Structure formats: structure tokens, C-alpha cells
Length: 431
RNA sequence: GCGAGCGUGGCCAAGUGGUUAAGGCAGUGGAUUGUGAUUCCACCAUUCGCGGGUUCAAGUCCCGUCGUUCGCCCCA
Image 1 (cartoon, rainbow, N blue to C red):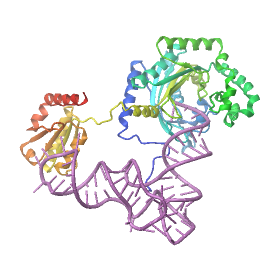
Image 2 (cartoon, chains in turn brown, purple; image 1 turned 90 degrees about the vertical axis):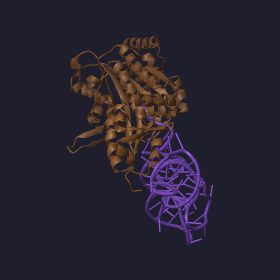
Image 3 (cartoon, chains in turn yellow, green; image 1 turned 45 degrees about the vertical axis):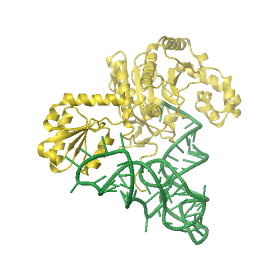
Image 4 (cartoon, rainbow, N blue to C red; image 1 turned 135 degrees about the vertical axis):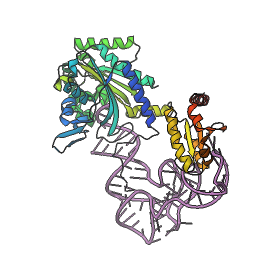
């Protein structure tokens, strides 16, 4: 066992799985272009400082999970731990704000975090990231949430729950944070060790603790919602009002606190109960301060990240999408002349729109038929010495075994008949 | 970073200290030198993730290491 293995926490997406990824990407693309979103592609690595400044030095994603290294020029580089920061950097650097109005952007690709792999978590994972930059309106929040739910429901994922919260303005959050520290400090020794640690680092996280005793203490802790200023409250109310109006169910969860520093106001999470400990399929929120913080013009924004691996897990559980290869014709040949003709025939057929696989084995016809049968093709074509000599080909309908002979040129010209027969057989098979 | 479980061929596995490492699927060749989900035959692990130790004897016990799975932290 000295062969080289994939890096821990990375995974090959094999041919048996990739069709599912294509389905997800296709549906996402469709929904996003319906809503006037434009794709942006940004590098998977950036200056480490971008993440330190944007996401926050104290967050786990940056503080302890970042894949950072020095490049040959001595610069500190990091594989992106999430997508938003790089996207905002691109927005600023390319002056997309100069186009005025609202920018609707999306990006799909890998992100990296140095963590122990477990169910639904890898070191390299893939995210769909969708952002609206330049709108403070509550309708932008709602549009973002609606897009997320539409992608998920179009995929057929229905057993999901949407949690909603407002973390208020930066000021609201600071006030709340102070109040929490004041509330928890007297109980410090009763808290679980993790939460004691969080008291300094990130007191909002204590609310999420799974420890029983801590949860008892949390019951009477002040609620974030009581610390929203008037504007924050109005925004939050408007978001809820619109969501209800368009029929999106949600649960207010005052304990929903997202892990990255840049969030303000709306925070949301979409979860599934079928994912083990990593239940979040999609998480997002508003980040009105980030663009300015990274050196751009003051630009409000909101967006979400959706975890593609987690979608794949859910879709595999449902077994709703076929991953069978799509093939019209399997071409069998044997003998030098036949093999020569088969390549020409195959390319002519492909030019006519057929999906064609050529058997390259040169093995006995019996073996080739076996493979034809397993290939999933509807029609088998047989080219042996006799056919090659006569410029003919045998057509064998693999479902029925019915077989006939025609000239190769007739086959190539007879596109409509053959195609409609293939379509008919395929329709019967799925009926 | 912490905790627990698991590591036998491409895949699924039996094996619980006695030595020749079951079986199934897949694969390859043949019976069938041109007809496919049937049948039959043959081939397919000098070796049980890797390294060390205990023992007359180790896939089986011990230690280490790597990988993997699940959980904690945290998050997509």
C-alpha cells in the first residue's frame, strides 16, 4: 500500500456520483438566471489578510481552520475558507459598484477548512454562494431566502426547516454581548468548559450549548430580540412580513448566531434532520459593513452559502435522480476492416446527434454483446467481416433482440426513423 | 485540537492463537473461431493498512503509526 492517497478530508467525485452534481448545478443555474443573477468566478486562494480582516481573526474559520501558507514570494496566502470575502474583494477591485444599482452575483466552487472530517464535513467542500450587493431593502433579504428555498424545493428537498433571526446592527450586537457577559459571569463555574471559554471569546455561542446544565442557565438569559434598536426591529419585521406574504414558513430562533463576524441584521439557516450532526444545508445573512471594511464604498449586502456535499447526501438518500448513463447506440466490431469502418460510422452517427459508444476490446462477439447489453444502449450495431465487405451493418434492438440489416449509408441517412424508434423504446421503458 | 469505533482482493465479506486465508459480486480466458442478462470450466490475496513486540505458532493478542467512520469544538 504505497500508492498515493487523496489528502485527508478531500474526496473524488466519481462517475457514479457526478451526474447528481450536474443536476444540482443545473437547477441552481436555472433558478439564478430566472432571477437575474450573474455568475462570477473568483480564485480559490487569496491573501490571508483578506480573510483575517473580513471574516474576523477571532472566528474559528480563520483562527484555527484556515489553510494558510507562504508562497515563494514570501506572501501569506490562504485557501478560501468561504466564498463571500473573495467575492466582495472582486466586487471592490473590479469596481462593480461603479455600475450603480444592485449587483446580484453568484459563485460555485470549493472552499477549504482544516478540520477533522466527519459526516457532511470535509476539508475541501463545495458551496454555492449567492449575494445581493447594494440594497438595504428588506425585500433583498427576502429574495435571497426565496432563492435558497426555491433551489432546494426544485431539487425535491422538502423536509427542511428555515430558522430566522436578527442579530441587529453592530451596536445592537455589542450591547447584547455586554448584557450576556453580565448575565453569565455569576454562573461561570456552573457552565460547561466550552462555554466558560466562550464567555470571553464569543458569548453569543453559549446560547447554542448542548450541555444540559448550561441550557438551564440559558433559559433565563436576555434575548437578543430585546436589544434591537428601532430601525433593526423595523427591518426584521418587514422581512418576516414579506416571507409570510409569499408563503415561506420560518421559525424565529433568537439563539441563531452565525459564526462569521461580518453578519448584521438578518441571519438565517436552513436545516435538515437527515444529515447527522451537520444539519445545516444553507446559511446566510446580511453583512452591511463588510464592503466598507474591506476598503470599498459603503455598500449593504446580503447572501448565503449552500453546502453542496450536504445536498448530495440528501439527494442520494432520496434516490430520485437517475445516474444511468444515457446511450443510444453501442457499436460492436471485429476484424480490421470492420474496426476501421466502425470509427467512421460512429463519428457520422454522432454528427447526426446520436449518443454512441464504440467497443474497443476487439474480443469475441459474445463478450461484446454482453457489454452492449450492460451499456444501457437501446440499439446495438454489429460490424463484422461480412458487413464490412458489403458496406453494411446489422441493427440489433437490444431490448427485443429483433435484428435487421441495412447499408451503412442508409443508416446514416435514416436519422428520423431510427431516432423516433429509439425515443419510443425509451419512453416505453420508463413508463 | 479532543473522544470513540473500524481497517482481510476492484466491491461485499467469513475467519475469535494452530498455519493450505472460505464464499459471493465484478473482471479475464475458454466451452460457443459472429450474437447478449442462463449454464459449465479455469484464472483472479506468497497475504490480512503499515511498523514493531509477545508466542513454538499472529489476520486473530499488545504497542505505535497511518487511514477511515462517527461525535465534540465549529460550520456549508
